[in-house]
Length: 110
Length: 230
Image 1 (cartoon, rainbow over the protein chains, first blue to last red):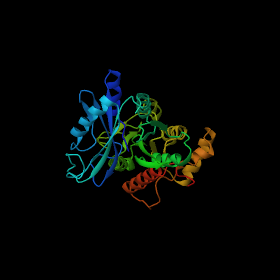
Image 2 (image 1 turned 180 degrees about the horizontal axis):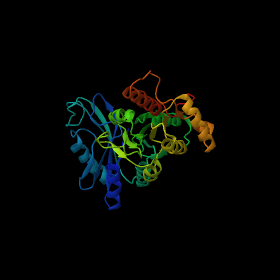
Image 3 (image 1 turned 120 degrees about the vertical axis):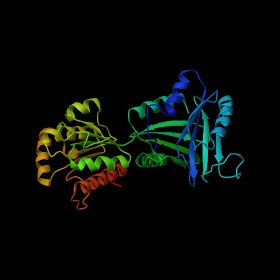
């Protein structure tokens, strides 16, 4: 369940767009095991690499931001998966032992 | 996500209305659904379930993988009456994640010593609710026993459709209340939404036990909302 606050990442994303920035939204769409952020949690990223919100406890945000840069320039959505150790292609892992799937899309491109 | 969808989503969230973004994960196509919108077919069923549970997740419908992101306003509790039960109830509600407000115009009851750390308004409900109106994601518990204080907020809660409306008082007290409310134009259907006597029947005896019964009833009503007739 998302709790709405005045200055959360979705409001910030809209403000960024108003300022002429290109913005990507990353969303946790699935979790397995223990995951620090629930399904539905957002991380928003602008073209300069500024970000707000989180999709994990800080473990994989760096990798998501890097991927978001590509999404911002190409406009193509991307599905990322993070897990423990190196089971996946990603070099970062979740220390909590869970797995998450993160969907990254560019704002404004349907 | 389309910027237009984000804009509408933020407006709905700010106005404390439940809303859902449905995204086709293959195409990236998004759709905004507000609670109460008519949605047909299999999607309609999962949308209804999503609003009730407040849980987001992925579903497969007609071969498409859809992500449903549910945004439900944080539930609130407005307590009328800074009474003994309220002292326990406000703490329990805060623990359960509710934003809590207590309203009582009687300054002898509404003291910060009795309600440390609680949003306490020593004014008439008529005045407080003008600035902070009730809504569908608010529960109202009227606990003063005094019609002069309880009646207005109870009727207002029924009018705006608070998910929970509870009133302290015996069956006899409630029968008298029903007479007054009928004369004030409250319909029978609205009247049935009042939980009176208040609280689940757990034979509660002390103020704290009554608070448990009330809080449990609020939680039950919130989690089962929209399930009537199922």
